[in-house]
Amino acid sequence: MAGCSKETEQRSETNNEELILAVGSEPDTGFDPTAGWGRYGSPLFQSTLLKRDHELRIVNDLATGYEISGDGKVWTVKLRNDAKFSDGKPLTAQDVQYTFETAAKSGSVIDLTNMQSVKAIDEYTVQFTLKEAQSTFIYLLVTTGIVPKHAHGPNYASNPVGSGPYRLVQWDKGQQLIVEANPEYYGTKPFFKKLTFLFLNEDAAFAAAKAGKVDISYIPAAFSKQTVEGMRLEAVRTVDNRGIVFPVVPSGGKTKDGHPIGNDVTADIAIRKAINMAIDRNALVKGVLEGYGTPAYTVNDGLPWSNPKTVFPDADLEGAKSLLANAGWKDSDGDGIVEKGGLKAEFPLIYPASDVTRQSLAIAAADHIKAIGINIKVEGKSWDDIKTMMHSSAVLFGWGSHDPLEMYNLFSTKYRGIEYYNAGYYSNPVVDQYMEQALKATSEEAAMEFWKKAQWDGTTGVSALGDAPWAWLVNIDHLYLVKDGLDIGKQKIHPHGHGWPVTDNIEEWKWLK
Image 1 (tube, rainbow, N blue to C red):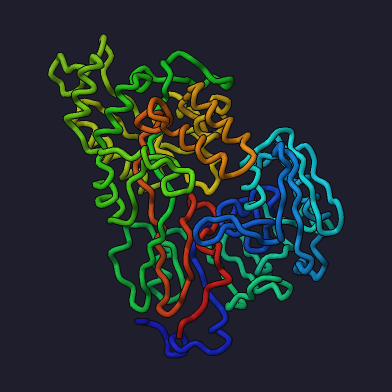
Image 2 (cartoon, rainbow, N blue to C red):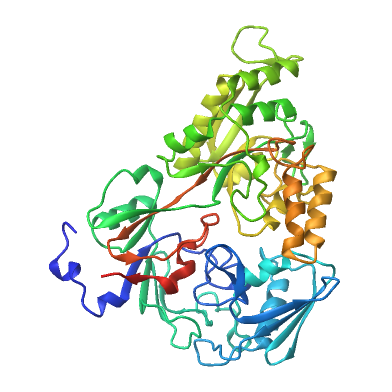
């Protein structure tokens, strides 16, 4: 690589086993799975009872198998007997019990409200009893890293002890994290003995790649056309989506904190459907994402529970205009904006001001919509402002998870106005019923049909074919500059970019030369 010394180019045997990465931001709350660490990718320091393979199928990790009772309420999990924590202590059912009990009490993003109890039946058998059947409970077994009962305390998030492939050596907050291979790891021994994660913003990460200071760097699409000598660009498909959530109820309401709820324009389903029809998603992928992405139609495109029937022809300006006209929206004063009953079809679309990609998507989408007589006023705001405005303004949000429970959170009547979830106050009793049936199914497979029907059953659903509470825009490819010769294995579809999803298969990474 230009500007690098020969010593850097020709790695010594020691350096050959080390990697320097700039692949994501520093976790604010540290590395404690009971507080949510590891939900978006490998927990790195800890391991989980189950995990997903390259095809997103659920397979064993710490577990050797599990059984579910006929009523779906009792899950019995058998553990492997050779797993040890990085301090050499054995991992047993007591640690699993402790982890889930602690997570349940933590008040974090891990929702264990349906877990009645968890008990270590013997040293390597743990039994979960649920209040009612819950098909999505399996995803908690996939994403929750197991912590040691004997070494979990107030400082654990900064000094984690786990049974994963790596152990923490040094964390210089705001700068870097250094980890080493865990000699006690029961799984495939990683090729790389030492990893250094640099916490850099996108510009700095790209500069580090150009200077030859990192082996892999996450970059935004804006940098994708620039070549870096000695590195290649790898684009990983994702369900890391961007979309516009609409307030679906009329204005006039207030949250308990006094923030306004509802918007009279977006409360009209014709407006929401017309926007979905008019947006040219392929143009957004090409123009904003430099071709690195895919059109989005749901929150879960490409995942096992996505409904392929939700895909529809977009960029249909004439169809959108006709739909608006039939719903009574006309431009009677010739200003280019349609109106109905004295109400002009205009509303704000807000996005986090620090996010250049969301800004570009918002501006481009608004431009598409202008052609059908709807005026969208794009505004960048702080997250603090967004919290107060998101129930009465359209917002450009990003989601994407390997857990269908996210769909429930975004569209369930129960989650209206809860955190960032159902910000638009959407509610449909038919959709609620499908999602409840999906949750209460006794297996993941049995739940699939209900998740799909909640998106579109031929009559109603949460997709643009149904109630259109969102206009999903794109799924953003995760782009990495990777040093020539570095094999990062077969990446599964990435979730939303929190955490470091690229490291989910870190044990497979190796040098090819």
